Length: 121
Image (tube, rainbow, N blue to C red; front, side):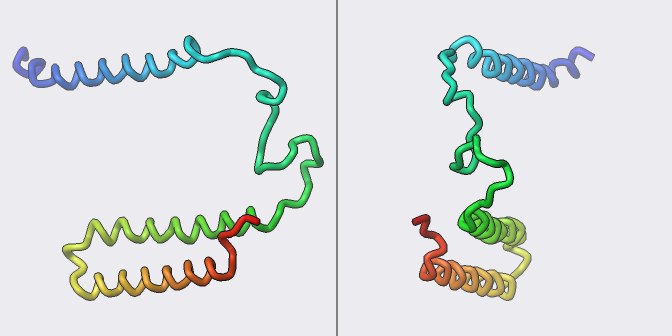
C-alpha cells in the first residue's frame, strides 16, 4: 500500500496545487480590483446601441451579415481539424479534396471582400 500511495503522490500534489492556484485567481479580483463604479459603467451595453431605446428596435443588417460570415469561416476550421488528425490515412485523394475545399472557400472570401461585405462603413 505505501508504494501505491507513493505512485499517486505527484497527482495529489498537482491537484492540490491546481486547487490553490484556482482559488487564488478567483479571490484576487475581489481583493485587488478598483471599486469606483459610475452609472455609465453599471449600465447595460449591447451591440453598440443605446440600451434605453425600445427593446424591439430593428438591428442593422450588418450585424447579421457579420455573424453569418463568422459562422461560414468558423466551419472551415471545424472541417480542417478532423482532416489534420487523419492526414496520414486520407492519402493523396483526401489531400486534394481538402485543397479544392480551401480554394472554394478562398474564392468565396475574395468575392465577399470585393463586394464590400467585410467593410463596416
